[in-house]
Amino acid sequence: MRLKFILAILFVGTLAAFGRTVGQAVPAKVQPQQEKQAQALPATLQAAFCKIDVVNKTFLVLPWDEKTRKLKRDSFRVLAWNDQTRLVSEPDSLTMREFISGKPLGNGTKDVAGILGKRGLFYITKIEGREVVQKAEMLANFAWEPSPAVGGNYGVEVLGPPDRVTCGSNSN
Image 1: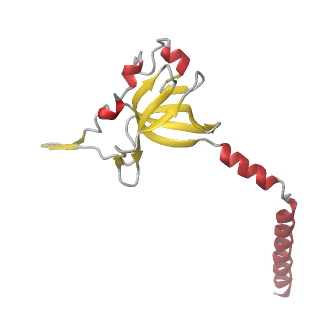
Image 2: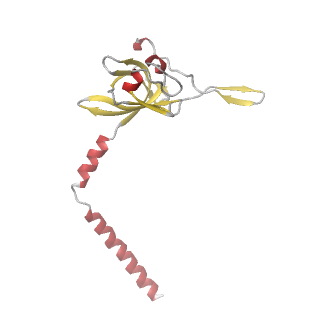
Image 3: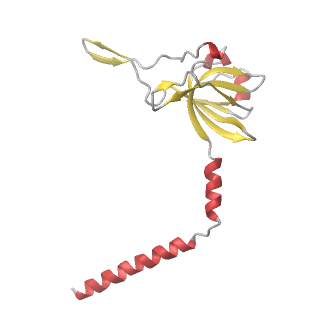
């Protein structure tokens, strides 16, 4: 019994000493680097493609609000893109340069008009004060987006959201 007690005290003391040395082993200079890396990670935005301006290399998007589960119809955003911006629609991944030049994306979308109104997850990085899209993944629906359902004799069938989002007159 006494031996177990002594071993327990030694074990706890060893853990406490180990914890202190691990905490002291991390130099203070590492923390600012971690903060810079966290700032460098791209922000994400769920939104619908409303307009793609090829000349100015911008997307006009209509953001999705997960809390209210609605589109923010009064909050259109303009996001920049560059030739290396990737469009992803499984199983395909293209750069904007490839897409604009006519290479088909995903299910055969060949031009800008083909993705207007589609849902996307945009990975955005601030570069020289501009929000630049690094990657845009096509989505079937937004997070928490309600899906209409139809009831019948054999149960309920979930229809899913409409294929495209209506952006309204602000996108013209």
